[in-house]
Length: 112
Image (cartoon, rainbow, N blue to C red; front, side, top):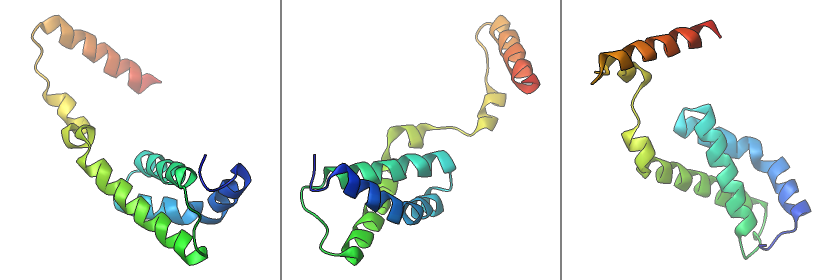
């Protein structure tokens, strides 16, 4: 455990989550990615060995950590290699029967 108890981390979370989430969402432009990044920021806060000096230091640290998490995500291989959903329309099947299976999967997903 870090410098804070679970109750103290919960209080920091209640006080600062909205700010951290908004910073992540503005940078990442994706709700799931922003949620993951915000969660990572608070995990890092839990792992800190030293307490924040004051509320302004806490806020600044969380914002900088959110920005750093955004940068880490940009460099991550999954984000660099990820294709837009439209790329699925350009798939070429080695075996034409695979394409038929894919058509069934797509049709089923539109029903549900």
